[in-house]
Image (tube, rainbow, N blue to C red; front, side):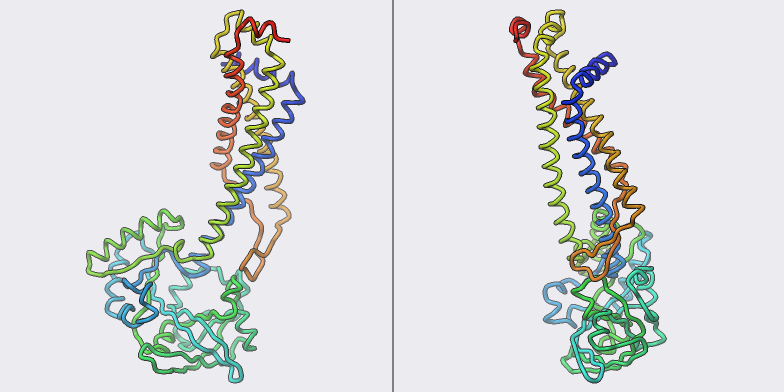
Length: 415
């Protein structure tokens, strides 16, 4: 094998200009794919954190069966009653993979500062549980003030655009108006404890967080709309989906008919952005595929034409057809390897440049800038090298197969 590598390397050096062009094409393709892969990986990680912790979805959300289709029409019928919440929570807490189970209750209506009113959408939650789920996400979104506590039952945290619309500041009072499940209008006071940027322009002007007890008082209902489950290991779609199926079976055995959604299913923004990046990556990958294949085929085809007599001479000296194929395929492999190594240099140059400059940008549907990151994913780089080697070998095999089939006499007499 060393002999084939030596001969192939000498042939590459002999045709240095053509070989360099091919190597550069492979390197640029490798670098482009690796950089975009790193960016996509970073984006997916950020979207995952934003969905699980930023949106407060946790890993799994448990609804009463029928809520997702009929819950808006008959809300009280498809809510969990207090005793149901306690039983399901008790079952889930016995699961060693479950870190936390928390109750949620959604509220919508009008919020007023005494002069002006606007619509709001609120999440009633357990403050201690939500602090575990969200972690330090709030700090990165310009949070000011204090977070919810059960000690201040009427406290709320509002989106920064909503606060601006109603000229609300920390410590200000507001009035919340909504309808109970029985259809009666209900109004309660609210005190602004904190203001934060939700991270999405679509919700920053209407989202509000309040304690679960505050939401229950507004709706005159002591149960919960849903239960959110934080797992010890559920940050991947596959892990969350597998656990959702297991929890569904466990609760069905206990007599509860439920619907369970993972964080990936509930986060519309995550799904839309992921689908978009998957499509973009497919197009970039296809373009690189065509460039690499055509470059290697062109280089090796020219080499076959120029070295036809050489091929005839080797065949006359006893080299079999498979030897010719092996020789040119090895050259293709070396071109792929050299191109990949140079492409890795391109990737690391861009990677360290981004790390040093720390650029930021405002992505679509976001209301605050985020850092531009390119992750270093060694597994992806390794796969890219293997793929480029295989692709180059396959591309080189096409002209190699043609050259191996030439008759010795025709090859020796080629002009």
